[in-house]
Image (tube, rainbow, N blue to C red):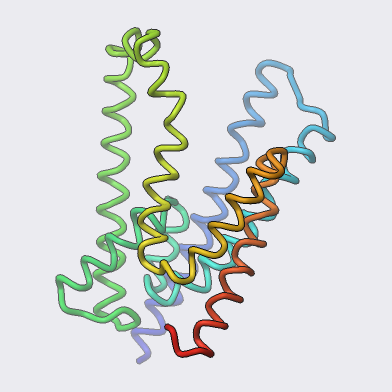
Length: 220
């Protein structure tokens, strides 16, 4: 028990140090660009941009911490939140690794497997991105051609459509009401499409309400 406490204390110490260091490095990139080009954005423009994304990032951030930390363990949580893309990559990797190793999340064995899986996933992702950047220069003229332009114009709809199918199919009964509500809202009021950051919490509340009603009626 004493060794476990020492191990977790070391993880928390290292995790906090590297998290703060990572946040500083990420912040210094735009600051360095502004200093180099002597071009600083207006505070009002920054505030306007943040207003559209802060609601969704705060909401998702709180939900992911409460949801993923118990699943990933101490080391996996620090590493996963630092490297990012948890729900689409790191969490599935960790869960699959624990299932294949026949260990449960929340146990010491599960935490070790989770941390290793997320570390390997991060390394592989970094290598693939690096190779992609190096190879991109060779195919850039083709990607920027008029032939490929229609494909790139539909990247976001295709991406979010694919992700939507995965999440909606998991809990169709719960997802159908907020999905229809958002579709109707965007059709009737197209200007609301620019307020996605505000509408995400609204959709979440609708989904929670629907889930509560279905649970009370024993439909879940």
